[in-house]
Image 1 (cartoon, one colour):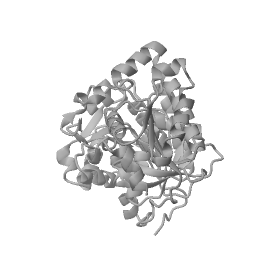
Image 2 (image 1 turned 135 degrees about the vertical axis):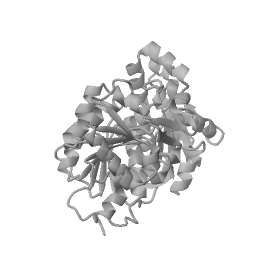
Image 3 (image 1 turned 45 degrees about the vertical axis):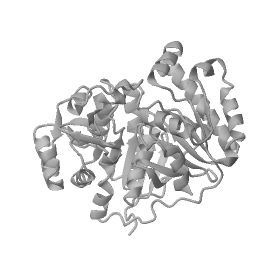
Image 4 (image 1 turned 180 degrees about the vertical axis):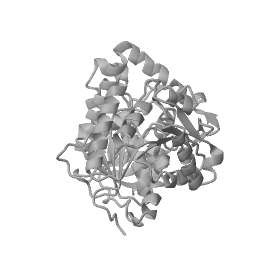
Length: 427
């Protein structure tokens, strides 16, 4: 049975490019045909033939008021497209600042939907993220003890999500603790009712296993808005299926056959991506674009593409700007944070255009901001989501572009061999 309702079932707003892809991957893996739209859809943009549409914004690091404004516009378009339920996707590291943007956007979307309660759960067990007693863990460490504490844009130094969210929203923040979540969807739904009775509209939900997340989706079937990492959407397809709106979706991940040369572009400075770069250095040719040098020599992007043309016939190559936090801070101090980011994004967008023009049909991109720059430079408006490479990262196909397959990877995701493994999976 296909989607039996007119329009889409689920409409989601994501605060960055790779986060949107991560969410799409979760939905496709559980049988929802999913399209990722790049940036705010226009009033004349056609509603895709899909069960779910995820609008990928670039709002994570915007001023809170701007993030709220464009997120509300995206939700409004999704409502007109027929969405029965809404989801706000942010990173499984809950990275934010005391001013937002997770809380302000969640609050605004809840009001826009007319809902009376929404949930917050960044847990993603497959990537080692869990929430216990309202605290966010990566593996067995609190998020504040990991490399995220030194993130150059959104350092995560408070693992208590109730406390973090409380500084961002109006009213008190509640918690559905592990002992309740572990009793299943009925117990979770009852806890939501108790929170409502206490006047609480924003609720952190504990989750350690995938079953907890599936149960959360079932318990939240009646909520107009849910929020979280991609894992928090894991149970939503089952909820739609249980309600008779969704079929098995056995071909949801099918993409056209891949063709063309292969390349990787990396701009993320996360620990995971830096490790993947080191691994790639031992396997394939790499080209480093120094951000500090780029300021004085914008022709470096052209040099990188010229270099790649002579290397790609034997397999994938890597072009990267990624650097350790101390190096990033040095460049930001010299150029200013926003100017440095814009310089790098423009350069990598130019590199992507040059690579595709040179015959690249399989492109891996590491980093949310970098992914946004690349798809913008290439003029991509929508992506159909395919099969998974590593947890949270699928291959996609650029609709409207001839034979261009993209893997848009969050900086924190993927095993050490991700850059080489991605192309093996696509074969």
